[in-house]
Picture 1 (tube, rainbow, N blue to C red):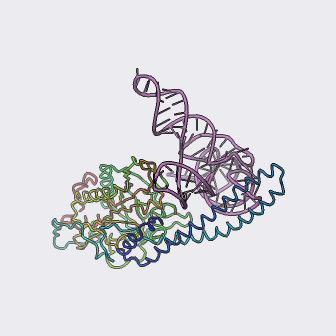
Picture 2: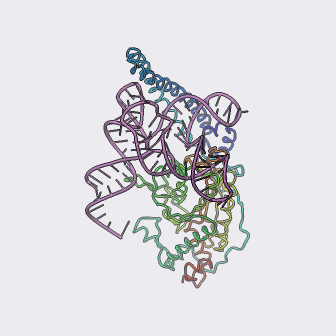
Picture 3: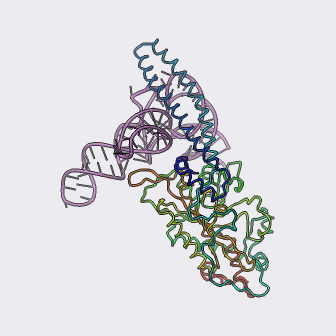
Length: 424
RNA sequence: GGAGAGAUGGGUGAGUGGCUGAAACCACCGGUUUGCUAAAUCGACGAACUUCGAAAGGGGUUCCGCGGGUUCGAAUCCCGCUCUCUCCGCCA
């Protein structure tokens, strides 16, 4: 969520940013400025009345003590009048604040200047193309879901029986490979200086609001209504919320956290083409990395996170490319996002496996995540996160790219974890 | 799930209707002192909104778990909620 003052002071910048996103409701900007002004005016009136009440109350107390009841009674009448005025103002104030908040919740983050204009994923910029070789597959190669059936790696039909569509059951060497990937990703994150967390998989409304899943993406989360908790769609939510309502010291930066969690996404309305196999599921595993940074250093941090994800893909020897998301494809809360796509050779498709974003102060404003500078002034910190990495599509591309007539060859870096080198 | 107790500033903890944004102690920070470490001593020390100011800083309002109520006046009284702790039950 943007701050009203920021919007007021950077109106042109905000409007231009919204244009890059193809954002239609630009009128909300003026509305916000007006509502905020109105809010201040009402508040000032209320404060003045309250100040009068407070000082009168003191006098009344003194008068009673001195036994001057008549004078005191007279002042009580005034106070009563002021109180009813405040009550009326209070209602206005609530209305204005609600309207202001609603409007603010509808303004997405201002894109970074390097974000290209555009409306769909076709307008994303290829930031780094793949310049190496693409895997050459043997005759009769198969997409990963058929490989899975052949070798017994994961079972979607069994998932339907146990839960429903989109809940894969990994078994045998498939399960071990999954565990190996998680351990590999976590170990690499640890080497890069991230502290590992195992957070709760259910979060409360405050947390979901803090990172911006609510109210924007309510329909994407599973909601356990009896206890009013949400299944996390990504570890970003609990891990970033560790620092909700925290005032950091400048020297605490950078804060680097990682965690493996299953992720739950309803993916409402996204059935159809290209969702076969593991391409899109309701529950998947992911290792997430989160940075909390000083505003001046957050883009350096973003670069480091990109390098970290690249190193993972290099080590797995998967062909990948990096996209800089255009305004239209950029997430609501993000200022700049790079997507990583891995080439899955049997489907001959690029599959998104990671998304690395800088949210600048958009999340920290909701989170009330601040730091004190050298002069003891408080400022909002910057938050960033990225997948490092999301498992299902990595698994899909490993299966497809590494298939041979003899079986599926395990990438070398994973063998210490799997303790087998082929699935046959 | 049943019974009871509690929730005050970074921590411990006082405060039961006005003099309390909040004692005291500890921690943190700044100064003085000291052969070093330590100790001693003095001072500053919460947050949000807002207003004046170039800034330093000053003013107003709000905040003692959250929400509502009583009252001229609430940390203090009343109601609802949430959470924590203790005991019992159940249990990986």
